[in-house]
Image (cartoon, rainbow, N blue to C red):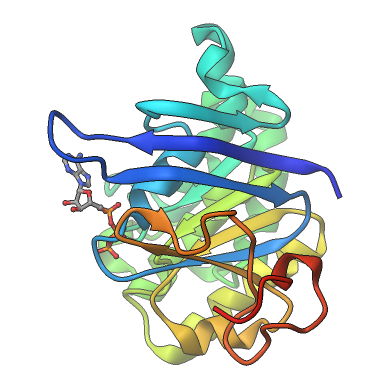
Length: 245
Ligand SMILES: Nc1ncnc2c1ncn2[C@@H]1O[C@H](COP(=O)(O)OP(=O)(O)OP(=O)(O)O)[C@@H](O)[C@H]1O
């Protein structure tokens, strides 16, 4: 499978302190499902921000879709960002817009004509099972409903990569499982999915997913090899050839 993301010796430093991320090298294959795990403060969000181009590395190269993201001219960045959908733990929905209009936002920003927006938005509302809440504003929705709207908004542009940062942090286990099913269904359609989570129960729900573990700013395997979740290590994938984590 093609490498859709490649990090080469990436480092990230906020301000003048020590590096938050050091020597990060890994590749993501198009169409695969990845979990990114690690203790609080280990650097998961920072790594994801580099991936969805909210942050530039202090050193090293972030290659997306075969191109060095650091060398992209500024005017190509919005088009590049549209190829990566992002789901934030705190949803980041616009409170004054309805669920419908939050989901429509990326299409409107991309300049899609209004008469072409309605169909995809309806389809997304149905997919996340929230047709009856289309006109509700986010403050009147539950955490799980808000997160489903956020997922619908992230994928309405049909991104090649979906990045989700602790997407189940604010929902109960049943809703976490429903959200995971949405990610799985996207992955089956070919989207590369990257989910940061502390939740090993969730990780074990997708036995074929690969896992990256980050410890104090470094991938725990310095080669960047990707591992199966606990209990699946050494299951035959070339990426797990260095033994159990
Ligand atoms: N904008 C910033 N400026 C300065 N330091 C930051 C910034 N963002 C994150 N950090 C620091 O970088 C380190 C890694 O933070 P990050 O949010 O990436 O970790 P995390 O693994 O996602 O943690 P959590 O699981 O708690 O969300 C932490 O020490 C954090 O304080």
